[in-house]
Image 1 (cartoon, protein in one colour):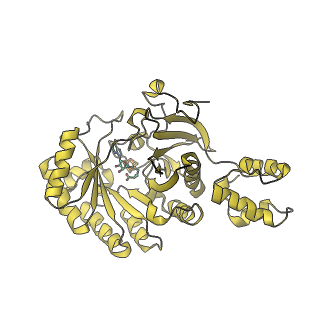
Image 2 (tube, protein in one colour; image 1 turned 30 degrees about the vertical axis):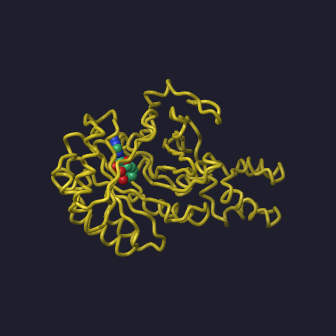
Image 3 (cartoon, protein in one colour; image 1 turned 60 degrees about the horizontal axis):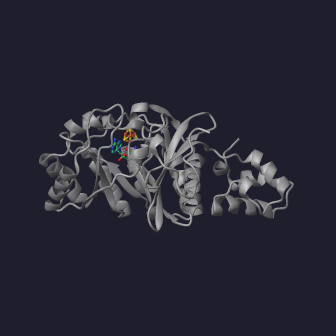
Length: 355
Ligand code: SAH
Ligand code: SF4
C-alpha cells in the first residue's frame, strides 16, 4: 500500500475508478494543496472518505512528539510501515517556520560525533515518506508559513539521491515551497553534488565540513577518505558555477579538536574562493562521542578570526537541545533525557509520549 504522498496522479485516478472524474482532482488538491489525509477531506462524501482512508494510508505513524520548554521546537518520532523509525524537527520563529527533515532511517556515513551515525543505517526513505514530513510540519506550523525546508535530519540525502530529488521536486511544485527555500545538506558525497549541479531547480547546498585539512577530517568524517577535500572543493566550485546559489559550510565546533586559530585559517582558505558562508554550531552532546562543544566565548573568537580573514560566519543558536532535537542528536530510539521535565505546549495539548 503506497503512502498518500507516494501515489501519483495516475495511481490516484485508478484508485478512484468508478467515481466521477472530478474526484481525482479534488483528492489530489486536498493532499497537495492542503496537505490533507483522506480523513480530513470533509468535502468528500463520507463513504468515499472511508474507502480512501483504507487506500491512502499515512506513511508516518506518530510514536511520540516532544515540545521544547520554550515551545518553539517540536520533534516527532515516526514509525514507518515496516517499523523503521525516523524523526522530524519543526522550528517556529515569530512569523515563519522551518522544518528539518530526514532522508534515511539511520545513516551509513559513520561520522563519530553524530547520534544518527552512531546508530547505523536502516534504510532509505521513499520520496513520499520525505514529503509527508513537510506536509505534516506545514499544517502544524499554521498560522505561520512554513518558509524553509532543510535536509538536516537523519541520513545523508545525497546517498539516497533519486528519492531525495523526487521529494524536492514535489515540495517545490506541489507544496508551495520553492527550491530556493530548500537546503540539501551533505557530508560530501561528491557524485551527488555533481548531479545536483545538473538539475534544473536551484536548491541551496550546505556542506558539512568540520575540518579543513584531510588528516583531521579523515578522523571525524570517514567519507573524507573517499572524497578528500581537494575533490570536494572541486565539486562545490562546480555547483557554484552551475547554480550561483549561496554555498554554506557547516562546522560543529569541538573543543580542542577543530576550534583553534589554525583551523580558522585553514577553513578561511577553503571558504574564501567559494564565497561560502560558514555556520558554526557548538557540538551538541551525543551518547557515543566524548568530545565537547566549544564554549560560547571560544565560538565567538573563532567567528571573529574568520571575519578577520574575510569570511562570513554565524554562530547558530542551538534549538531544542533539551529534547535532543538539535543538529546531530536525532537517533529515533530513546526518549530525550530531559523529556520528563517538559511542560506541555499551551495550544497543542500535551507532551505526548508513546501512545
Ligand atoms: N548527512 C547530512 C545531513 C544530516 S546531518 C550531513 O551530514 O550534512 C545535519 C547536520 O548536523 C550536519 O551539518 C552535521 O554535521 C551536523 N551534526 C551532526 N552531529 C552533530 C552534533 N553532535 N553537533 C552538532 N552538529 C552535528
Ligand atoms: Fe550521517 Fe550526516 Fe550524521 Fe554524518 S553527520 S553520520 S552524514 S547524518
